[in-house]
Image 1 (cartoon, rainbow, N blue to C red):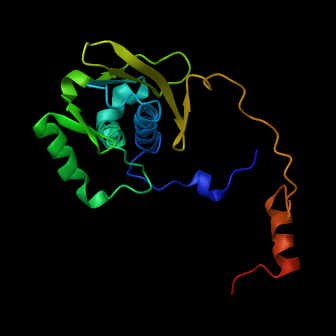
Image 2 (image 1 turned 180 degrees about the vertical axis):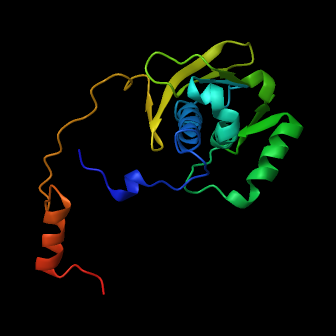
Image 3 (image 1 turned 180 degrees about the horizontal axis):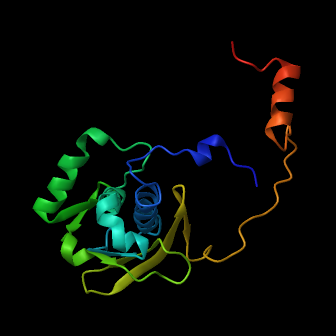
Length: 192
């Protein structure tokens, strides 16, 4: 498996990518799925449960803020950080949230966002998102895990062996720093 430096280093609201980038991505993925499957318009209630480490320290690490912004369709690398405080204040004072910025529903953080210290089975950073219709029937439920570095997996990928050998032939392969420096010297990659 090859990873780019852009996979490892993320842009997002801090202080922890597991507690902010992952939950924001999971929340956005959930509501984007509602829209894709034509369930957004019939959604009148969303409930979110943050488990394990997210439930124990999520408030202090900003997981609650990340989830609210993600539900509104924000992504960690594009969210306007200058208006986050005002947007969160608007959600909290109005008792409403705009799913994907387009579908307004009632949202009371104390009622609709639960912090639960007990972890889910797969990983200590688990989340469950649920959508309900006007009759109170659950129309969608998804489980996500923030597995570190801002990476998120859903219940389908949880526990599966996701590491597959990457057979991409690299132009300048190296196994250690000495070999990397040798390539730099041989091909003139040193910056002056």
